Length: 271
Figure 1 (cartoon, helix red, strand yellow):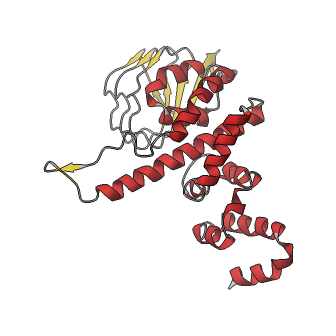
Figure 2: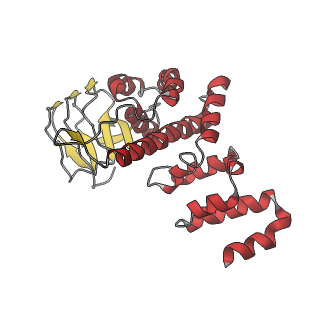
Figure 3: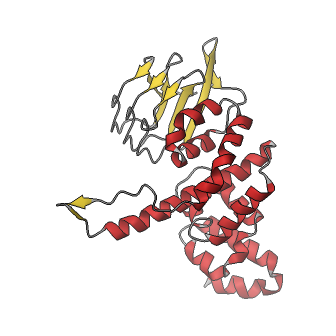
């Protein structure tokens, strides 16, 4: 732990207590924290990391509403004054991601997260239905003067894109968990990989163009699943134009597939 964590005291974090606090970025709840009530940290738009004691009993589904940048939730234990990640707890990125996907299951997710195997079993029962759900689920149009705002369709499209990115990240993180020996059932793995192929580049490639944790790891997974073969190299390099490292990786992978075209490709993209 480093000094840039903001410590939150108290056994109960009251309703709306830190709502909208833009100074919060990395938060450590006290070791005796028991409960986080509705909207306690809602709209904390810069909150990225949260450390919860593994003994916490209740976290409201609304406690972190609209905390879109909350990308890590760690369960910790404290022994002899030292704070360490709780043994066997689930990956902090996957836990934060699952909370965004299933906010109504927050309490259960936190409870299961104390044991990663149990957490993944709980998660695996929900993945297929989440992938099949409408990307506009839970979208709330902005209302002005009793009528939908004229930008509503743009807002809906942006919401759908964010939902697709969320689904993609969930698949990537679940597949990465297999490296820790928690294997995904073959039929579920087929459903997940087919979803990635269907939503490439909207999500499968698009997530690497966003500010998200594990972005570099996601790109390795993208290529290992051979998703780059779904689209022409020109389409992908255009999308990656603002990210030189990703663009270079695309070109290397393309040349591995078609070595005879190496001089032609390098000449084209060096102009």
